[in-house]
Image 1 (cartoon, rainbow, N blue to C red):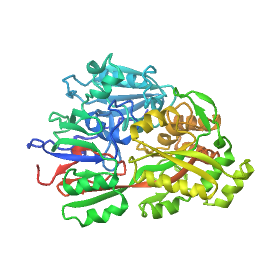
Image 2: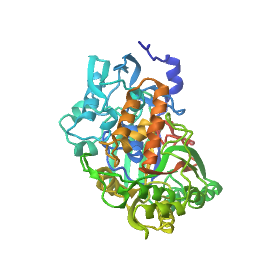
Image 3: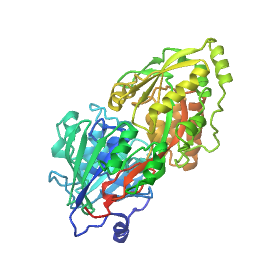
Image 4: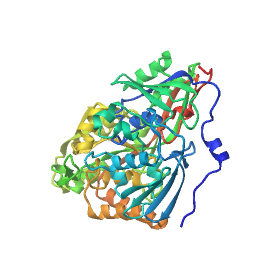
Length: 515
């Protein structure tokens, strides 16, 4: 039996924001590239929504600024046996509507997350959870069908605790527009594609936030985002393009904060077609059905050149869709060599000596210079005989009408910020069949992912993830590009430090003048 993971009260004082006598004051306006697609905390799988919702909802566990898992709504937890986890819950916590937080709220939330009728996008991450049991008012047990070594990682990111009476019997449309959690900020209003306003929860169990109001504004155009920062309309601008950093650094009232991101940018290439319910239909139609064509696409692209010319060096080349910080990253893998001659030969061998035409789908404004990166990729492909037409989309349309319903064939650009810090947090949702983003079908690959998910032997998990990555790359199911560098422009009136997790945590912000 693994002993209790408990922290002394002194440790919690050091880790959590202190309650202060002064009431929350002032406002911080944050410009993200896009508006969230939803405010249902179990429906999204995207950072723009997460950055809003982590301020409204609490999870059982959380990660501190050093990315270590710490107690949150759960004060302590233990593994009772390989398939049972027990959580002791924080007392005297209330939801924004006055409901009391307890074990029933945890059970309601985790049961809702896994409800097959709701088809929540986060559900696949908890497919090993078989049941949730209330032991007493402040103790809950989670039972899994097999060992689930990364349950802690998942609960430090997903599994937002929702107010049972508020949400019981309500549909997803209601949850999307009426968020109620226990977090440090209450939902104020959402004017779609204009702003989301959050107000400080002065009764938050961790102490009242220092900033009274958080405003999230979607501004897709990089230059417009920076201009809004310069004019004082916004206080934090995310994804600042490299060529505008100098402008911010030279401005007397602004500064830059940056960190190597947990996010990698890559291009999934369809090998198999699934329907909107994530059920396999059959091998994808078109040229990418042939592995040699997929390998040709990968050989025809030079990510190093894109990093140098488009991103001005503000990215790190990756050989896989994982970063070096992720458990399971295979350090022996090397990026595929840029070789347009090999790409042309592979096309000829596949029966396309004259090249091919295909569509390349991309968001516009979600990631750092995403449209420009996609256009650069298309230009390189064309030189190797792969005439790629770039189609760009607004973020909500891109996710809900294409990516998450398997209509982005044959290839699309996406970024994945895996803050579980485990390979499972990328390989499973993006490539294991049956998940919302998966467009690859391999019983061997699925078996490797399932094996790694349920093994409690770290060495075995590392070896299995290495095999899975090699298989995926050999199949040409993905073109890895780079690890993103997170670049923030900030007003000097705001205290803020960029994190590799990309989190925008309101209780970790303050105003230098206090208002």
